Length: 290
Image 1: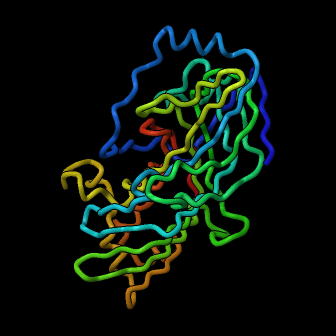
Image 2 (image 1 turned 60 degrees about the vertical axis):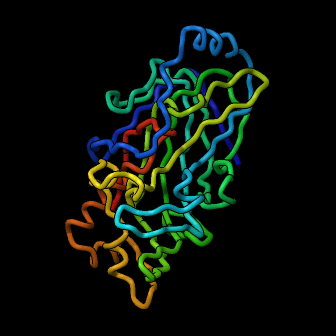
């Protein structure tokens, strides 16, 4: 898998849709403060030479362990395929803020050469986020990340950027579902926000950057209050269960456009651009094809 890096290059993103409202995430870990002066100084001191930058994709515990939707369905995933392309990690200067900035200005950047499909549901309950690739990269602080979701060229998800395969149960009813989403998405994101810092690469060492996907935005979270933003903005599973026949649901985006109500389908389209995060850090949606 080819990577490349280039210094002193500014990269701009022009979205095909406007900025979207950012949904809150339930159960979010405390957000880390901005780096201290000592942290920034240490990163600058270490930014001489190269290290190993590991790119990871994370569907979070919702995907690996299962969860209850806002409308009471217990959902578990067998597979959740995402095809990532043009994955690029940046040493942004100044720091990129998705809610404010229209472009990422980078003094260093490292890019993934080829699209790759990952299964976010792979592994057991305690599995680490999926490793997409690793690459030798200039040392420094990688504080911005961008990627696109494109159709898979081959494999089970061929032809689709996103494919969800799993089972939902509620009150004795079971629905086995396969959802094949054809929308192509793009995200440009700022610094990772979470319980630990990511992206600070010291020469001769290894650091992670992470593309995070929040599927509770789509289904809601049964452990959060009904009036929590994560639930008021979510589709839930009831509208999908209503489309099942004999406990089976296999649907493409085109099927859902025809079979869901217009309000439900527009809710779905509005949610997709909010899937991408960096931990709990927000992203700007830069591309949405329907």
